[in-house]
Image 1 (cartoon, rainbow, N blue to C red):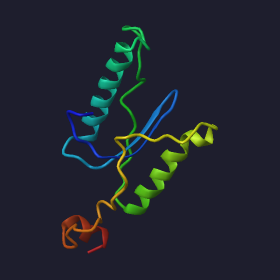
Image 2: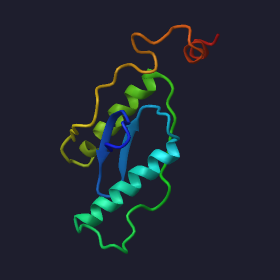
Image 3: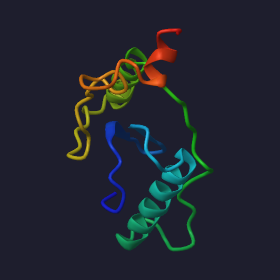
Image 4: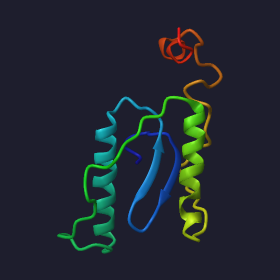
Length: 121
């Protein structure tokens, strides 16, 4: 979404659901989900892929919070393999960025409260 510069590390768009792995952002996750659902609903209707009165999303979405690079890497693999498990081609998207090791990426303060908490200090 161009109006919000979310960082996306993985995406799989399936016939009946979508997986997105988004980096923490100043927006609440509930607001990010709502924006994605709203924009995609309007786009599907604009392209006449759904009638205006047809529901597109079945609910408020599902969220999981990941706070360690190992969990993020595991989830990226899961999302990337989601279509492959159904004998579909692996998906690539121009808006997906390579994972940079966040929140422990190079340049991140080793003394930030977040990193100290992860070290158990």
